[in-house]
Image 1 (cartoon, one colour):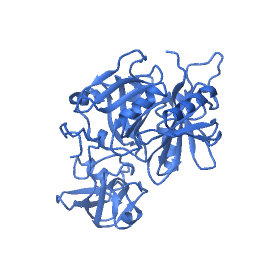
Image 2 (image 1 turned 180 degrees about the vertical axis):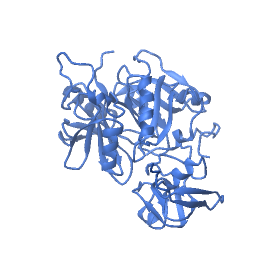
Image 3 (image 1 turned 90 degrees about the vertical axis):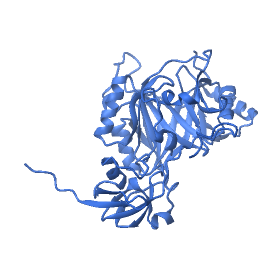
Image 4 (image 1 turned 180 degrees about the horizontal axis):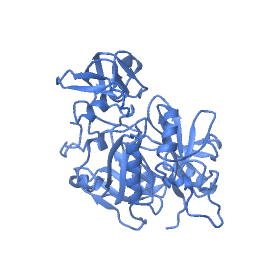
Length: 119
Length: 309
């Protein structure tokens, strides 16, 4: 019986919290985090379209796929600012989380409680 | 009701980041039928049970989201009248020539106060649903390919100025308000669900500071069983699921939300009720917005209010 080939793992470190998880080379940084039930990078569309999982890779090699220019400019991308759902690790990675999950509904009129506006 | 004037949402043009990947997804996972490609490289689809040539158009772009939504009107005279009515109301319109979209007649294009581009058109080639108009069978093999929805049903758009938008749709375009969600002040609109037909919604909006955003495009299934089948097909294909299967309080539809390969959210749903223009609208208060959106969880998931393209 042939077992699947062993997976290659790399260590991903979130610099703000020190959180560390093992991410496979064939999965995205976001998918690896989600698979282990970990938190730290906000999870949005997982397709490079919504921008909430924006991170800055401070150290490490990675492969990447096309991501929305509405959220990552060419200059940012060249500087290692990417969406975690479009990036797979080729080495251990250290990253800072830039994206936010904002409750982006309209602010209520000034007199009302601001609970629905941005946190 | 007699469906006249603006009849239904007929087409939506979506931006995708990788056209080949998205074409495969819309064809084989969602299960739409590819009906053409144009010189601009756009790919055209229809749901198997739709009769007109196209309802979903994909355009390769550097960002995800929605370019435009087209509503089919009863006939050419209606189109001309609605163009006049829009201009008289103070909405600037422009004409897009016939054929700019494949198999589609002249369109009247305008921008609504939420920042979205809308179009009206009277003609789109009837290519049928794969069955003859005489003695048809009830369904065809394409109905079982992928998720296989019956039709593009509605979409939910995020943007500002909901009150002005509601006025435009009800006073000029003949829509009626079916359900609404109020903000904490008990007056302003957080969300609204409007219909130009007997459907519970043909279009929906949530108030959002950034104009022109897409929350989801929705496809109709025949039953709750098919919603569960859609969920299985999504998981088999490792589709990014947002939430579900579950039920909405609003419209009572059963549903599952997921994302296409570019992050555009889509819904496959069934059920809900029928609306009539004389029905008074249903109102949800801010403190009950959880069960209004997700009836079983009774709370919103964070992504639902935050993630748009």
